[in-house]
Length: 321
Image (cartoon, rainbow, N blue to C red; front, side, top):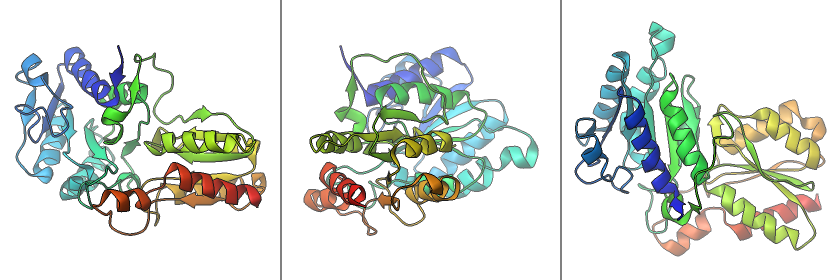
């Protein structure tokens, strides 16, 4: 019997609640309704005094979580959509992220952010916010691309004494399945080689890992072996694994679903050109969504973000250099 990406997130929350009495869940409609995507379905029945509905105030939600963490709790906060977390931005970056630095008191909160686009979701329900939060010291930014990582990295996030932004991709909720949840293999901060290769490296994360893998399959028909690096977390970023991959291939495509300006892909290229310029046989490339608000229409949305075909086209240009 298979398990979906969403079910893995739900199971991880169940186990966190079961194993640690200091853990509780807080979010809009998560108790009575099970959350906008049913990531907390039935958890309030299993743990009736530890799954709470929040007011429609992201600022209040995060502020409460920070206060609870100061008193020894480990709250898991659900944002209905990552986009709405901007309402709690002050509490996240000015309170949670700086708390240990200011007071020597840890702030072990985990903020689950349903991220990324789905057809018809439009500009207010499709954004990828990871680069925005990665800019601020004190925050850990997790971006699981597999069912196993959705499960294990959420459990690991709850155990961290740092505030964690857990960017779970909405498109993967039901589209991604695994036969079972395997054993924990890598810690937060360590990237994995999702596909080995020798002609070019794609460094990416979250749902774009799967687009990259499909593009690599397409390029294999042309005789090219494309290596795909799944970052797993964008902060901390595993620069060593990125550089080792570029050393093998000599070419780099940094790939992300978020907007291009000042994003994770820019950070990847900055690190490679600073620390591994001598490894490159061609100028590095990056591919992101277009620098416009995200469109509603499904066809426009498909052309707004990187797809298997646009990634494959970018790789062919890179390999010609």
